[in-house]
Image 1 (cartoon, rainbow, N blue to C red):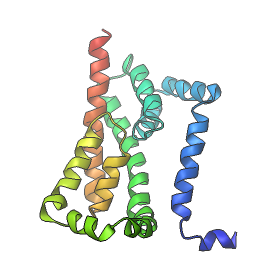
Image 2 (image 1 turned 180 degrees about the horizontal axis):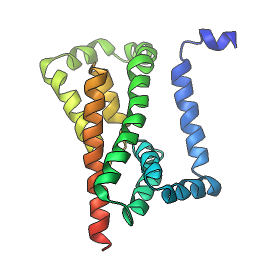
Image 3 (image 1 turned 90 degrees about the vertical axis):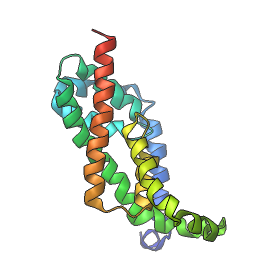
Image 4 (image 1 turned 135 degrees about the horizontal axis):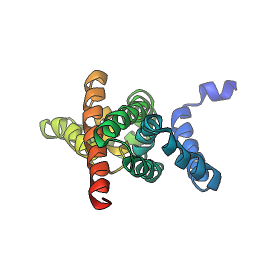
Length: 185
């Protein structure tokens, strides 16, 4: 245990372990059944669908839950509640990137010419474009990790991130849910 406390890359290691764990879980039929049963819990299911909707490994499950919920719940209400869940998921990723992974990736970054890349990132063109690109990714149905990472790297304030994440995710979820209602009348 003492070795783990002094391990320099513990957050990066935990991140990769969690990816392997989620990849393993998604292959289990029982896990799929549990997630699909969340659809019967109405708005609580929408909240969990929002959390699942932001990650690369769970976006398909989250979208499936949202589509199930869209059959009998109001799209505006789904978008609002799932948007709150998505903010919860995005905030977890944001804190991990902003507080831990950036520091741990620093050594790796320096080995691959980080000085030149840092200079490029801090030019006036990139200082405003990273959050904009991140916002476009979050608003799209694509998984949010890259967009949240870009916003975390850009040193965006947490309050501003939470508001932006809620608005963008709610819009993206509303579009997905509304499109499914229009396709399957």
